[in-house]
Length: 209
Ligand code: B1M
Image 1: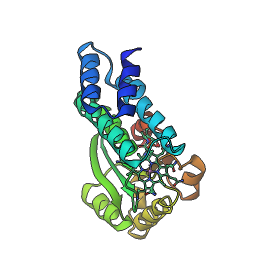
Image 2: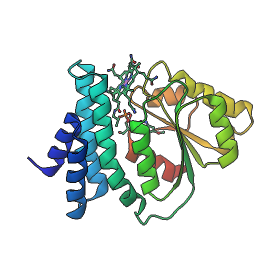
Image 3: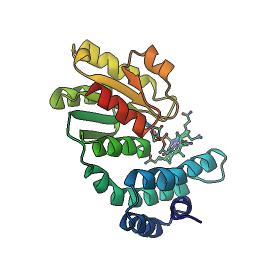
């Protein structure tokens, strides 16, 4: 089994220390951080997602897997940030009102940061008003909204409306992402873009910032 597969297995099994150890080994071997994330950590979480859906895994196990994934992320994140891309602007990201899923959001955040942008991560479950206030304060070039629940997707539209009502919609590009979100939905609520994953989000930030 390759080291990448071993990392995926350890994420699935929730073996936090083993994930950290294996990730550190690959880093020491000079593997690219983005490859470790994609082929090891994210690949493991993908399986976790599928098993959760099939009810082969339950919430506590999923959380332990997520923690294990974070243990690996903690090691590769500083290396992504060391990437020598020039700093071109500010990216703000949040999950929307009612949404606590932060694994994908954190991944996007890390990848954009790794591409040399300043990232203001608001965390999870932020209302349209909270995001509006943060946009006013930090004046980001791009605002990224993440939603993993069909029930929280409308909050993306509410956030865009809040920016419009405050008269600052034209000052920030808004991009969307998250498993239930699509380009059609982004078009429907007048977002500026949709990204299916961290690297697509990074491309959009490069385009807009
Ligand atoms: Co939740 N959950 N969850 N969950 N959970 C899903 C999303 C679900 C699909 C599972 C299922 O039923 N099959 C389902 C949603 C169904 C729906 O709305 N259609 C669901 C549900 C129902 C719930 C609860 C309501 C369960 C309950 O309590 N009854 C509850 C809601 C909590 C809340 O938010 N208010 C809940 C809770 C939880 C946990 C807390 C247990 C945990 C979250 C832990 C955490 O995030 N800290 C959790 C998890 C882990 C999942 C699954 C299993 C995995 C999500 C994940 O992290 N995937 C998920 C099932 C699944 O996805 N198959 C599920 C890995 C991650 C890397 O992918 O987040 O998609 P993802 O991010 C990707 C892309 O989407 C994209 O890039 C990332 C990298 O590729 N992306 C962006 C994401 N944001 C982006 C932003 C961008 C661009 C790209 O630009 C701004």
